[in-house]
Image (cartoon, rainbow, N blue to C red):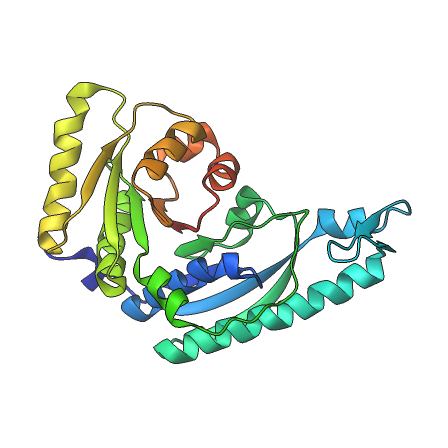
Length: 270
């Protein structure tokens, strides 16, 4: 079998960005995948419209953790904070993209910070969703890559939610390439609700793994909700989840519930 990644036309990747360190794994994965595919990358900083509306409430106060002093929050102040975070997110994107030689662009998007809304708004071939909190935001911090941080990055593991579809085949093929490039462990989650479907599904995954010369650990999942996926991903200790956008489990459990439950980068392959 010839790797599907060799056949694809030039792809377009959109990555939602978080200015905090929690968003760095999703950014790094998106940049590396763009480099592997020769794809263009667009970073999107999400201004959560609900957060901005919340800041307009007259009774809202912020409690400073270091001084326990209360400070009023206004819409204007919130917008200034978000602009500062957006500039930091853009610098993170620029640095990561230039290191890998990836063409990039950046935009600020205001809307609902929900996975389903983002998936509908951006019709990219691959959508990288970083966990975004609509109520908690952090100021830019020191992002220098210390030896300890580099060691943690080297321990990254990847899981791919597999099914019998063309998109799932592309997702697993890309996961193999990304795992090899990052030196990451790879797990394949098989959502076979019927036991008789499991051997054929596993055999198809094994063919793709063999063609990519990639080893993987298999995890079977029988449930159809986000909690079942969380248990499977948690058992394999994954940091990044790659799945086809049309995967039945995402339709049944709901994309938003899965992203929130997993609280890790999710790459949707279309």
